[in-house]
Length: 335
Ligand code: EPU
Image (cartoon, rainbow, N blue to C red):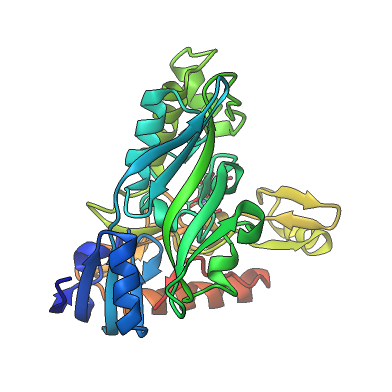
């Protein structure tokens, strides 16, 4: 194990923030991780770095989880069961599944990050959440260095949420994720408006996994910035859920406010719409700003610091609270 000193983390976080790791090590096997954890407990884990905003340098030992490999555990006529090591790139895994005709993750195409972090925030897009296809998550407990298996229900998945953001936060290093995917009779989820429109524009009526994946890729490319070109972490805030009475008041004032019914008394409103209506969409403040095509995405145009982006997020939160009486919750991990 090669522990390096004073390493820039710019290439290890999709926001492209140039924070420094005092000490840094890349780990490529569960065994090495366990050996390391016997000696070092004060660690900071990083994998794809796709859901974090670094606002300071990291004093702890930064452990970059980089275990690779995809294995098929079993399969029958209808399903395939796979285990994927945490350092595999998420989108490469999706493309692999689409190529093999394994169904279930095609709507999650082009989401940045690695497989090991997909359960932490229960990544989701276009009507699908990764919790639908995860069977188990394996993780090394930092305190005991023992490998622990979380069955799907142990992960306590919710909207952009799981046990790994709560009770288990900073206590485990996820080493692999297992999935159950369809081999035939795929359950396609194309009801999301933008997917339907994209498929219709190509005259596709009975889409294959590849065609759904391509539609999602086209939609994402049209709205979301490519982190390789413009630093970002996807949606910076969660979509808030408000009471029906609160929604009806807002609707009086803003007749075009979009909404999704969650329950009899709960309505979800898109944070992107709130932020756009408050006038932030496309606003640039020097090195950072709000994406011009999707107001839910904060961007780093070059050399912004995490502190600057965090201050912008606070300003947006304050404005939304004053204008709509809604508390926006940050989705990204602030470090
Ligand atoms: N909207 C605006 N202005 C904007 C952005 C959105 O008015 O600048 C409106 C849209 O017109 C639409 C509604 O808000 O009526 C929803 O927009 P969109 O379909 O783009 O989805 P979203 O709710 O903003 C969520 C996820 C995304 C995911 C998309 C598609 C969250 C926090 N975000 O965004 O996830 O890709 O749905 O399913 O739930 C991520 O988590 O990083 C992420 C990108």
